[in-house]
Image (cartoon, rainbow, N blue to C red; front, side, top):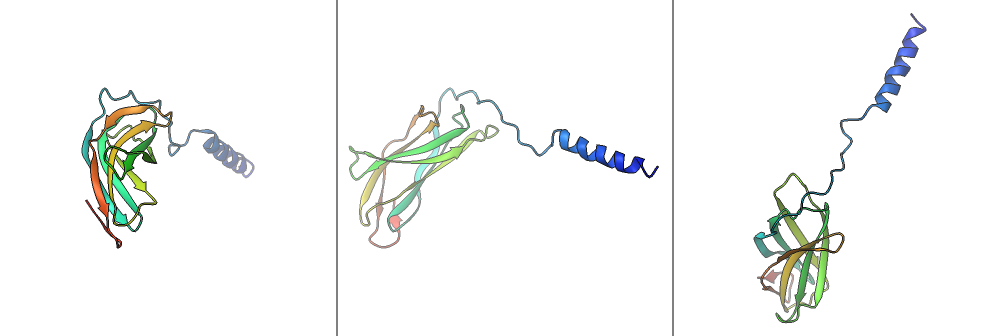
Length: 146
């Protein structure tokens, strides 16, 4: 009996190492792309201090590959949104909506900025959604106004 106990212990440990763990995450295949991606909330200025701002919006889940980017095109004139900021996001296929947040860096105090938002897959393919032009003004101090 004393010889059997160590053998059973080794078998139990080996079996635990070889069996799939319930905590191991499954990699799911890409979700079917949404028929039509729509912005359901925003975009809006979430926060701003000094020379940066965060723009936030919500859309229905665009589907496709999990790796995505929120994209903001911005500039100091509504007809010239030549600056671009992107922020990586990982889609959750079990959620019907996705919240995007993109940080704009290197802004000038006391300046009005115009922007549009959208999203794209990690492959660079646009999700086909674009907001109307919105704006905010950075203050000379630490806060910005919308």
